[in-house]
Length: 170
Image (cartoon, rainbow, N blue to C red; front, side, top):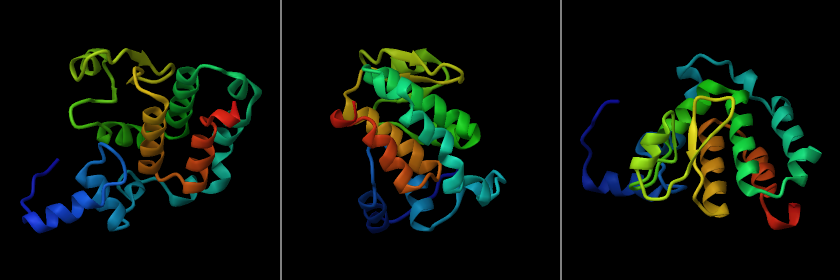
């Protein structure tokens, strides 16, 4: 990570473009400049088409998922699916996701515990990551939206996944 100096006016502009809590300046600039993260890690754009979202779509439409009453179980299941969809992009998104004082994902539960009180780290099974679980549903949805957005997943797919957390979909 490099450090650059910018004037106050430019800083305020970048900060004003924040779409979610904890979005870092690099993510904002990448979005504004339409700088594709995929090219940086050499994944062909054709690998992330709507057609390849079927695994995620099938998950949120599965009976196991729709019948699950626990929001935390749904949350962990979606995070696991996103990691399995593309672990490299998930890792990039996970490292850039944090609040003002709190870290949301880490490879070590201790890192989450030291970033705030009552974080209740939970392992995302099948991944090297842990996530805080002591947040409300709205925060869990923001975490998922942020990760999906940073992974370059389409707005329509993000909307389908977040809709799966609404009370009417249970």
